[in-house]
Image (tube, rainbow, N blue to C red; front, top):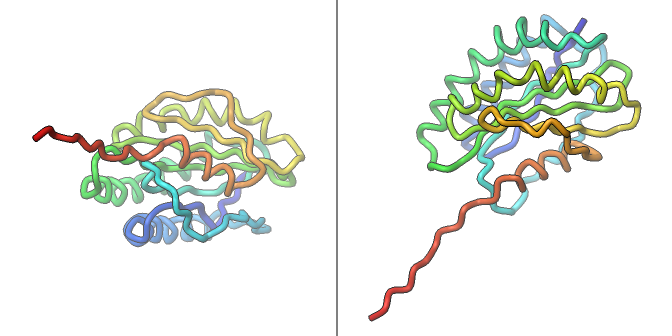
Amino acid sequence: MYEVSANFISMGRVTFSKEVAIPAGQVIEDIAKDFPCSEEPPLRIDPRPEAFLTAMEGLVGIVVFFGGWAANKFLDEIYEAKFAPVIKPKLQAYMQLGPAGKKYSLAISAQKKGKECSVLVCCVGETIEEIEASERHISKVLDLAEKEADHDASAVYLYVIDNGYCDLTPKIHANYNDALSCLKHMYPAKLPTYVRTER
């Protein structure tokens, strides 16, 4: 019914990779052994860091392939039962030590077998509570996205749920690099304000 890729999506600093993404990868690898992919399509994500300012501090996401669209079953059996309970404590610990005003995301990339189109759902928040408020809407968003997953053209349909709020019209990108770049640009860094004092 569904297959979980041993590959996963990650974006963030080196410390985020060490403390959150690498442990997430180990969890995903274990899940993928129970629900292996018959074929591992390349995600085609450029691993090189980009040098522009963003408040998006880190993202980690699981990749699933559906034979039919079984989003709710996947959410119950994999995402909520095996993935999120292990990753959230690590993400929360990282967030509590980080600077205020930063955004983080847990994500799901979903694709129908035999189709080139992907749906990327990003649950965004500044706290674990905000991410959980976003997670409550994953099922609804994936239901809406089912028709997008039927497209044969290679594209990534990006849905962003931020603190429970979501624009139900996806942003369409040619590939994952463009989708992740768009996500980072949604959250420009807040630069410090310098106040000149009169003498």
